[in-house]
Image 1 (cartoon, one colour):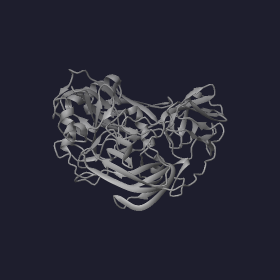
Image 2: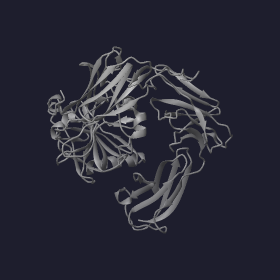
Image 3: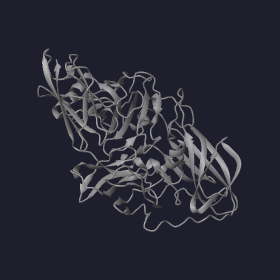
Image 4: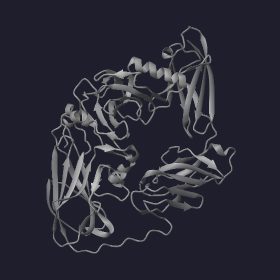
Length: 548
């Protein structure tokens, strides 16, 4: 079932090989939980450095090259004849042929951000062919290769170990650290408590006697481990059995990207937010629709309705078939579950229906499927330095929705240009906005963030990072900042000809290497003009002389 060799069989005759020319070790595996998303690939270690050669894992053709999209930094897509697409992310650079294709596109579109689409015959590649150089670009915290595998037709992300498991060594089974009892509110208790409670696994079979009555769900804190590395990984397969009967199963083998945000609802994100440990629920909230998770008719909730012992067992397995089990006994003991207070009138929301939450001058519209379960919200205004609107907070707890919702905030002051209004969060992010008839509206997803209206009619600030007005090395560096809505773009022209400026990751510095541009070096004074624009359409222009 979970067999490393199975990847070769499932590849319909197409041979796969590693993306690097040294022993493959991983820093992250497919499906492990991350805040607001599942990890959609594997992270291949590159020795903590950039500059490792990256190779095509199978025959195919380069179908896409992207820069600055999806947090991938520089990324390469290879489509294979078996219907899969391999994606190589956080690259430092591409092979010379691919780099030329990318540069031509960027200059033709006058854009550093790139999405180059290639036809099957334009750039064929063979298994093991050098295609790129590893790096640390995009939303990467350290040098590595993030490798994804996708179904070309459905777009679903797949576990790359399905085809590359043979080149990874792993004889270590998953390990559980603790479990959480989650009584259904008003319908169950565990050890006399109606609130969630956690318990450590001091051994694989706990001797402590637990008690419960009514409806209780369980969650588990567990990690997988691999040979030769100290990293913690997500568990591929989790099964919960009660008295030998399976009530829940999760096998993270594929994922529709549109369901990625459901990670916060399969796992207990509120607990992670406070303690930085992930407890995976062994029951399904009503709105969770992940294709790799299934449960019995009670959605995995255990009904303790007899005064007897119940044997609870977790079975954990990794991709390679290493298995561990953890068990404990729960005695059914009759107890009354306290009833919770009814939801505040007008604020109760159904997970499967359109919902609205309103305050004076504020409206939040949630589409069906945004929530994983019915809930009630208690929105409130919080202190804000802005005179344009109050700041509104919908939840005092972190609450990341499964779908985006529409937020409307009324403007309470006149401004010179309403088109410069936008919505900003207490997390410092600009959420954009559209002004219509006295309201600013934007799409938001996190109800644990306070939102307010802001106004930006100031252009970005552009400053050179060298002394004087002359520069002859061929490399130009500028700092471009915007402390309000944020920088949207920077374009440069030398004597009227476009030159490409590249944004340096995790900084406000932009760099242009004239030596890689179509501009010929003539050893004379040239005029450089820069045009910067922010997200509210404010523009700044700078003109200076360079020597090139």
